Image 1 (cartoon, rainbow, N blue to C red):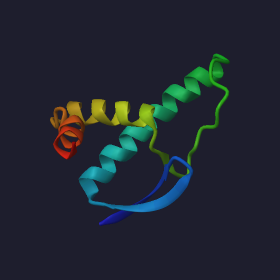
Image 2 (image 1 turned 30 degrees about the vertical axis):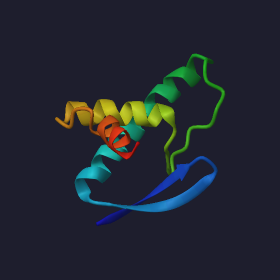
Image 3 (image 1 turned 120 degrees about the vertical axis):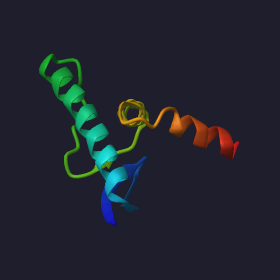
Amino acid sequence: MEYINAIIGETEMFLPTNDRLGELLFTANRRVNYHKYIAKMRKAYQGRIESRAIVMDSDFFYALEDVMEEKGYDSVVHHQFENKG
């Protein structure tokens, strides 16, 4: 088990994850940061690119869903939200 540093809204916390989930989260975070970096180079992004923690916002969850789909976990995030409602 590993702990990842995450920012959700205004709250920063450490979340416990297993190795597989941690890899998916870090891959999604790298993908989001890459897109932010490219947009910043084009002067289209004025925000901050966080490197010490995973910022869990809507862009992150879209990237996470894409990464999970590539790894064979189709629509897992949507199913979890649908089952809780």
